[in-house]
Length: 425
Ligand SMILES: Cc1cc2nc3c(=O)[nH]c(=O)nc-3n(C[C@H](O)[C@H](O)[C@H](O)COP(=O)(O)OP(=O)(O)OC[C@H]3O[C@@H](n4cnc5c(N)ncnc54)[C@H](O)[C@@H]3O)c2cc1C
Image 1: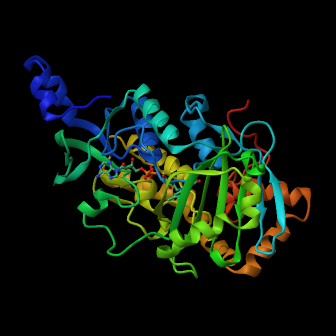
Image 2: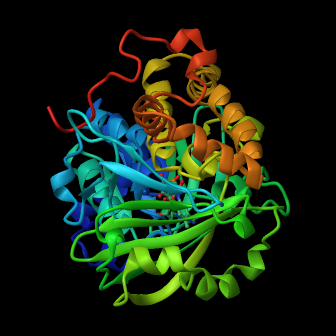
Image 3: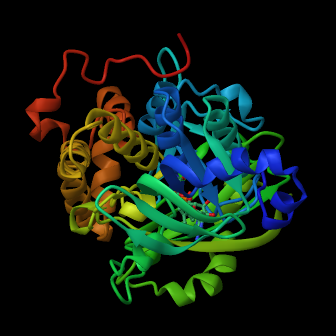
């Protein structure tokens, strides 16, 4: 880990100061080393740009998450030439068990050549992504928080970074999550905004029931609009939690009291088995999902991932969208190289529009249907009609194709739902 604090700087021979101080000038400064920031860093560094990533946390660090990787997330990781072997607890999933509010359970398969879904604990995945960015030549300085914007000029932005000082950069990518301190510093945060979803999760071990190997999604009537999940990990561990849409019947402040009750429900106990032991404390975090209502760029700053409110409004999943928007921001900077800052901003905004806007609208529409008990019951019934519906629903739910692909002919291709999975060829 490179850690350039003033005291470290002072201890270095003077001849090295210039080398170290060169870190204070970088082509692209990325704030946040989660999936969005590291994806952008990897693409830019591979293209030969000087990239510095700063994160206030020291890695490996945990992130409150379900740890589930959709096909979109996997395809993005594959594009980054990421190797799942670098994540020790990586668990491939070949189906999902979905339970409707009426108790009907349907298994949807995720099979074929390669992987369509996986579970990767964020403490391991994000650390591996940091190393992957470093391996491409990006400088990742963890333990250094963004403090504020010092100056914005026609051709530079200067940011104040804790323990480093002022960093001058041509572009700043804000990959700093739901609460995006960069967005706040620019006066672009909406007062009182708390995200569309709120997620709550815990790890458990000693799982001897079917949840040991199966991915479960449970729709219980009293937590609609929302659902609970159990995602399998090695050695009888699971990531288990629930998420609710804000403004529904369940209030965010009641999630903590609902949790023990949820874990006692017969279908959840049966899935986990009698020996489940819950680890450490549970954590909760907001999930922002309104990409079409967000300022995506500001002068030389591009927002990506949760900082761009990019998660899927239907499921609250955002790792794939974080990787995608990180990659798109990097491509926009590369594509508009030598052109105006407006060209970079337009490029990024148009590509986010192309890849995510129609899907977001579709997700919002569908989430209204799933919010009602009849909607959730009907959806699970329709999904279970035949092998064809089960197989293709699974692919669609796990974002093998964009949510609104049927309505966006510009994204049609010949191998609709017939593409092989990832990492398996
Ligand atoms: C309970 C829960 C369950 C979820 N389950 C899933 C799931 O199963 N699958 C899925 O795809 N998505 C899931 N999500 C959503 C997913 O976690 C996010 O969409 C994803 O983490 C976004 O990645 P990111 O890189 O944009 O931001 P983050 O992963 O939040 O990374 C932001 C980084 O910015 C850093 N940072 C913050 N402030 C500063 C600062 N001042 N200076 C420097 N660095 C800073 C943070 O330390 C952090 O490392 C879930 C979310 C929750 C809350």
